[in-house]
Image (cartoon, rainbow, N blue to C red; front, side, top):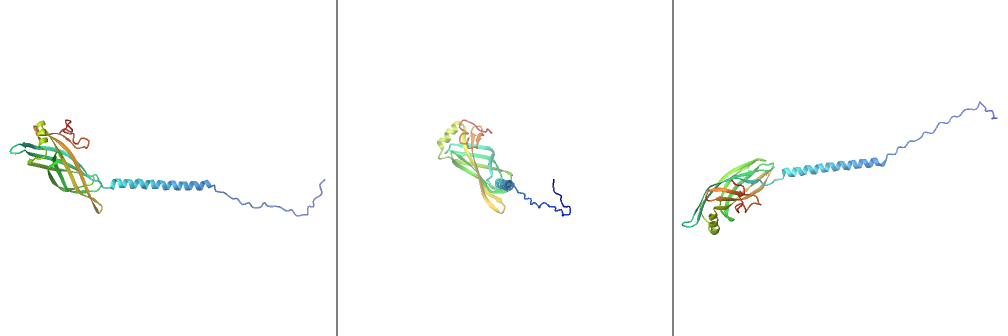
Length: 225
């Protein structure tokens, strides 16, 4: 039997002690934040590189593109008395294209005609301003009368016997490109070979690309006009 308890004794109650709750932040979250920060910096860096590359591509100055758009033979005549001389006249149309996003001004345009890599004569045209991404067409006429061919008489006689004479045409453009407050020099050049039929007084072929240059009149007509 259990002993009798005294009901007069006070009753003592015990309250639980407060507990401190500690929350530990996983280290992985800090690593994710750093990885996200580095990824953001990489994206901004890539975007900056792309923007600068595009700016350089569009704003970097380049020389104009020169093209022999049209050439016409006005007349050709070879005289053998009292000495071998050549009368020759060409009319050409040159296209000058400004590939930049700034206007350019070319000082002069020169068109020369030669035979067997020797210049026979040239004509100079005055310059003009070409707007950004624009084109200009320049007409020029080259007249050579009484021209004496001294160095290549033998080749000229051979070409006359064949009825076709190859001529070299060289077009050069020099000027300035207006870039903000600066003026940058520009130049462009295009070389072509033109085959002239002495009997029909016509141009039978021409070649301006480097691959065809020098072979246009070698029995393989190129770009018949």
